[in-house]
Length: 122
Image 1 (spheres, rainbow, N blue to C red):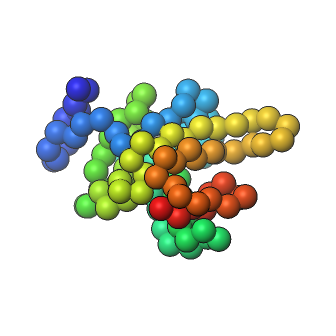
Image 2 (spheres, rainbow, N blue to C red):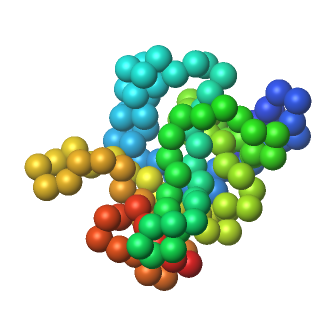
């Protein structure tokens, strides 16, 4: 088990989501291009809405008091623990092709998705 000691927090174990190498490369590129402060991390979560009921959250943000923090290949990742129910085992990829460009979510908990790729139900 790859545990990490987080400042002012208990030990946090492996992340409930994974990022592909292409997603990690793009996120690190965005960190530099957008000049994201070092205190911020990648927020992964869900919110109500979208054509299937829930929408993925993926963006750089400050850590909230209730967040769990994970390290994935040098990236700080924040997640509200209540979102793990919907995201556990999900893989985030990044595609940069002619037919598709952007982050892609492969969520084993999704029972229904829509064509946009960012909305699902569980």
